[in-house]
Length: 497
Image 1 (cartoon, rainbow, N blue to C red):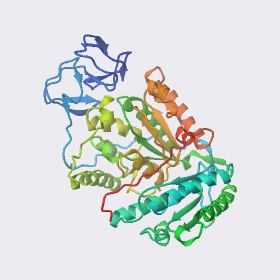
Image 2 (image 1 turned 120 degrees about the horizontal axis):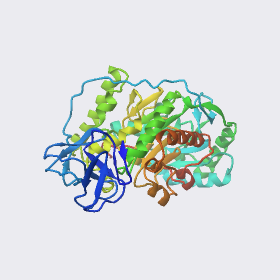
Image 3 (image 1 turned 60 degrees about the vertical axis):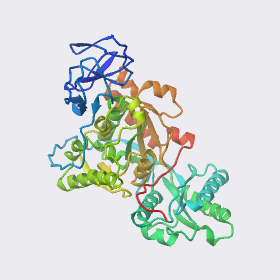
Image 4 (image 1 turned 135 degrees about the vertical axis):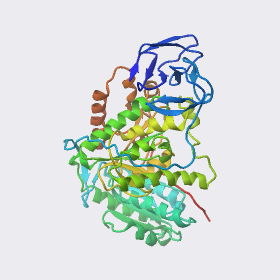
């Protein structure tokens, strides 16, 4: 990596650099022995050519092609959507070319968590209300509001997670809803859960129990609102008993190996792949070295960088699961007559990201250098420590919900443009630039922008690791917790009656 106060070149093989400040037309830029003159105004975060690039020639960033030039580009020219086009098209065939890493294990770190009856560990001691159907959304919200008054201070809070599904869905969509809700019911951050139903829905409580499987009656209660005279009174009674049960748990020392951390980005900018995502990637490697687990999702934002992950799969079986993960999602686009590579978003483009390859090469850095130990279907839970890939879209709330249902205690969420969104679990917002961190400090939790201002990755990553352990221990509450920003959304791909 080469940088000065004007630009940064990420990889020695790159033929572009990223502006660290607004560049004016005619401004001279020196870097690594090369001198170019800006051919036009170039906004901060956007790309400037550091070599002449012929029409059709690859534009290189992160050491990989991010697309090709649609016309001749001279050194010093501005590179963006007007003169670059993706190289991606259609379905691909992949060959397993393993390039496994050896990071070592056995490091010791601890956090203060809640050890549950089944041996799982939670980092919060909350009561969750999980609806079987959207018809009882408002009932759930009223119950949470009144319970937080009536049982204030007895737990870490009572929270309702509403959604519009659970009835009038068919086939896979219905099962998907059930699997996500079951994953939330089983989440160890909830000391107690009230499963709230209506009674006549497809996902009625007896049917939902078939998907949920075994449960502890002290921890999970059920209420079908059509079957009682006063659902608020009855619901508060259940929550009170769950709160009494929750009080039996106290924080105790737990090894970092018990932590499951979700990896997510949203509202990315050109610095996401330079600061926030690499920082989260180093965190992932550190946690894995401690025996812990990380989960990377957002499959469409792996397109163009998927082979990097595939070749880190621990064996051929996991590789084949990764291939299916990618191609199944591409076929989903094709099935709906949509362009597979219709990405990046308008906000990404405004922040300096031009193609999906560029976005993906930055996005996948959140997975660090760890080997991929498993690939999970949407709605499934992690079972193998290490780096896991999880099927799910890039949509922020759907992806965050999938990570929670998969067992993530915490989600590390990098952003260059900012977002208030939060999952049911603590959602650490990592700002990729200092301006965002300072301006939206009511949303942001950690500033990765310091890596562009003299901070070294070794020191910042260790500080960030300690910070996440403090979040896990309850010493720090994330902004989404403080603001009450918690929500869920469930993936839908079929007919609603």
